[in-house]
Each structure stands twice: as C-alpha cells, then as structure tokens.
Image (cartoon, rainbow, N blue to C red; front, side, top):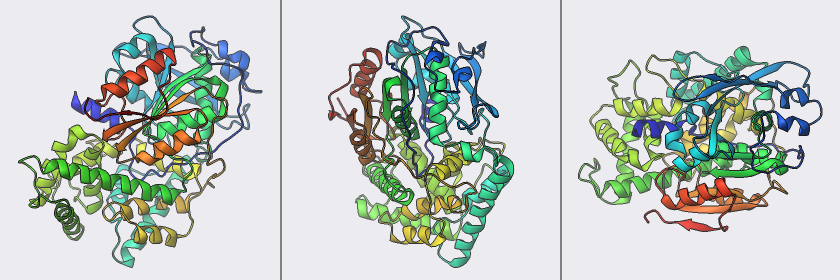
Length: 512
C-alpha cells in the first residue's frame, strides 16, 4: 500500500523541473454549473474552428478494475485545427454514488502520467470524492500514452542521468555539454514534429476539449506540482469554464528558469534539514553527529566520496555516481513516511553500498527494472524547454551553479536544465503572470517544508490568481491533500463537492 501511495506522489515529481507557463486570451462561453450534462453538450460553446473536437463522441471501453478507457482527438496545432490530429489517452473510474460530474486529475512533472495517477484513485482522493465524481486521468500530449516524446535509449539515458552534475573541472563540464546536446538532438530526431506543440498552453486547451467531451459545463480539477501550473493556465485561458480547481504544491510561473532552480534547491535543503532533525530522534540514524551542522557536513562528505569513487550496486551494472545518489536522496524527501528508507539508504551508502539509493532514484525518474524508461524524463525536459526561455549560454548555468546558496542541491539542479540551452524549439516566455481574471475561487495549497515546490511558490501563485485562496499545511513532504492531513482533506473535499472555498490564509497544523 505504501509503495502505491509513494508511486502516486512521485508520478510527477521531477527534480530540477524549472517550470514555466504561457498566458493567453480567455476563450469559451459562460460555465461553472453542476457539471452533470450529457456528453458532448460542451460543443455548443466550442471556440471557432474547434466544433468537431468539442462535439466528438468518444467510445469508452472496459480496461480493468472498474476503469474505462478512451482516446480523444485534438489538433496537433491549435493554429491549424484542420491539420494533423493527435490522440489523448484518458481513463475514468465512474462515480459510486450521487454523481456531480467529472474530477480531472494530474500529478505533475511535467511528464507524469495522469492515467497511472488516476488508477491510484483509492489513495489520491477520498471515498466521498469517489462517490460524487468520475475520477478522470489523462496523459498530457507528449506524455505516456498520448503521442509520447522520445529522445534517447535506456542505456543513453542511464549515461545522461549518471553524469557528474557538480563538475569540478572543465572536462566534466564538457561532458555535461555533450550529453545535453545529444539529448536535444535525440529529441529532434525522434520527435521533432511534436516538440513545438507540447507546451502547457496546448495541454490546457486539450483539457477544455476533455471537459466538453465529458459533458461538464465547468471543469473540476485536482492538480499537484506541475499540475498546478496546468490548472492555473487553464483558468487563465478559460476563466468562465472553471467550476472548482485545487492546485496543490504550486509552481510560481513568474520566476525565470534558473531562479526556479535555485528556489527548488532551497526547498530540498529545508527538507533535508527536517529529515536530519527527525533522524536524530531514531536509534537507527546513521550519522555520528546529533547536531544539524555536523550531520550536514557528514552528508556532504559522503557525497564528495561518492563523487570520487562511485558506490557498488547489487541490482545491475550501473555504478552509483553522485548524481544517482542525489536522486536517491531526493526521492524519499517527497514523503515523510519514506524517511526510514532514506535512513537505511544512507547507512548502506556509508558502508559503500548504493543499491537502495539507486533503486529509489529509479522510482523518481521512471526507470524500469529491465533498463527501459517511461518517457517521464524526456517529456519533462521537452515541456519545460518550450514553456520558458532558457539561457543559451552555458556560462549562465555555470554562474548559477557557482553562486548557489544551496550547497548540497544547488549546482546539481542548476546544471540539470542544460539540455534547454540547445533545444531545437524556441521557448515562449510570454504571460509569466497568470491572473485568471473572472474565475470563481481557486484553492491553492502550500506545504511549509515541501522539497520540490517550495512553500513560497504557493503563496506567490495564490496571490497572482485574482480569486486564489491559500491553504497552508504546516508539515513535511511534497503536496498535502491525501498525504495525512485531515484538516486539508476536509477543506478540499468540501470545496470540490459544494464549491464552498475556504477563507484565504487558513492554516492546517502538522498534527491535529
């Protein structure tokens, strides 16, 4: 059960995902009702030229464990709706009680599979929500089962992920540069036609087609991590089609990419410190020091040793380099319930064994036991690189890494965005401020010690949204709804069912 819940949490939590967004003009007619209309009724409010997409009839088929699956057609290029189409894969779990409508869910990333996320419905939403809503997941364009972006083979990704991302000499910088170029060139060679069209704005437009096809007059949505950006962009484009949006673990779209990287690194530093303080209370804590500064230095010294001499790995032939080790540390920081795993992994690493570290790293990046990957890592890069304008000068990444105030995670995350310096498609940095003017109340949730989406990002997004309502969870881990806070769960369930939004600024304690 815990592994399934962790998998749901990590479905989209891509380290060094400096996320951005593009704004746009509102579209669509007046909406926001009970979302219980018959399928296809949204077509009457379709934007010009898109009627055949909004009015399409979708064939649902049984796909096991009570779920139904379908594929929904959308234009590859919304500026050319009569041109090539792609298909968005969708799964739904029908409501068990008095149905209100559909709840669309997205776990984040970008690159996380909404289909896999929805199949964990028992863990990601409450029983009350499953009674009132069809739980609907979809793989955004470029992700998973929806025209996936492909760039590298499994072995090539192994080499790319395992490179030294805290370079100490020019040869290591050159290796990062070569790998980043190869990544971008591989994406162009294998997915060049798709790359210009995988950005968040197009995914948000796809969501409005899904809303119409599902028969909902207004969108009800739960988005986590990058999924908050997707939901916020949707609200900005279609404010009068919003019924209720929950944006949990928010992204701040106003930051430039390297600012986002540094802020995320600080978030991981905060989470690591929280882990260490908790570790001191457990007899199995592997650190000699029981003081924060001393344990942090022990941790840094361990990573320096791994950088000089990778750890052995009992699972396969990969050496556990510093990069793999840092990913393996980051993964359990997403969920406080996984901290015992991190204690064990560090204890093994201190003894020269990196098996647990690399196994948890694989979970974060979608690497399978047979050495193949989901396309989560490739989609994450492809979407980020077109959503924002990244520096094209490698020295910008060098400066960011060298000037970081996050000594353990800063350089690693700053260099992680380097493929965007060589991306074959120009990024779009317009509309970094999302307001969703005219939308009904939108709930934003921030966790005070969230490693991947720092709390201040949720504060920023809730302020940028004209109708934002912030819930603060005073706790650990990435995102808050259905991760252990009864207070957060009550507020979210009431809002989704009745559209009764909490007061802005309400706080939920770590322990009630």
